[in-house]
Image (cartoon, rainbow, N blue to C red; front, side):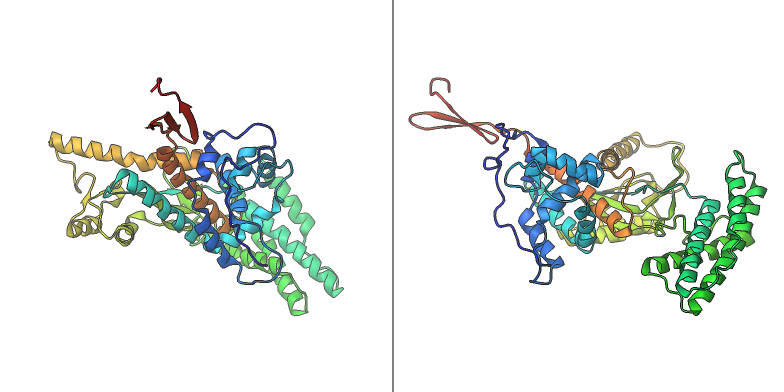
Length: 470
């Protein structure tokens, strides 16, 4: 497949609405379209098309713009395509020359697009971040303050239970055995699937499940899975074939069986790299200690805000201690701006002896109370300074509330690890563009006088005013 760049990006004046009603320049998506560096993103997107032959791919702005609308509106792919079909402002944002009452692309194109840009997602995010940073610095000046914190991004999965995972694994193995037995034209091995189904049904219908009953059910499921795994191995030795997707699922089931067997024998509920979903094996439980959700299931991100730009410092599915990332965050700040920040605003988790010593050596002020027991008498000036620093650190907490409440990161519906990362990057991009939009979308009005008349110029509107009025 080849990719051909779109040379001209239309302005709002040249966009044909087809409804005898022009677009409003105050529309959020009309204003946001002018804040995105589309030409630079087009060049980066060309890296996904090494060939010069074949059918031309769809424009980058068409699909990436749709992904940004999806993050903002939190619609499904089907609903998103229908909304773009019915909304002229959406069509202007994704780069269509005029309004058209038909869907500009199929909803399935979005899933292929997300997989294609997954290797370039970080590059795309950096291009937009640099663009936003340059414009914000020109507007706000140089502010040498770094704010950092971490949060979990929940993913939409079924709440994990060991008995349900084992039952799902047993059903998958029975399907594999039946498929390979049919291939080889041999007698179906005896899997006791009816008895296993009766055992599971009787257990799942109980309103209250005691620990002893649950342990007994886990033991029974492990025995069924052990027998089925042996049958699968024997049928594969005889020449039975599984497709690539089934082989991946079989590998996950074997790891699940090993983990559940270890936890059953050790009488524990903890194991390294614990699998909590067969469909999304990369998801891990993240213990947050919050009152509402003590455990969240999804990746964890370490985020920083510097000069008004939000950046992801670390993305991982396994839990990590964000205080260990502070040296890398400081180095990233130095690589970006050529200097170290004057102050770092972070919560008490970052105030380890190593981080305090590092900041002292670099001449950086790390906010927060000192280590050790709280003194009986605290200097009022010090207390006030700490309170003010905590209030300023609240900016990143408000940013978390925004990207989770408005940009879809409160519950990510993507399925694969790559598309989850793309969704998070798209939300961060939108957060930065919204900051830029808040500064540059303010209506501007000024007067230009000439010998014959006075022209009053407003945001995207030009009105001729008589001289006597001026």
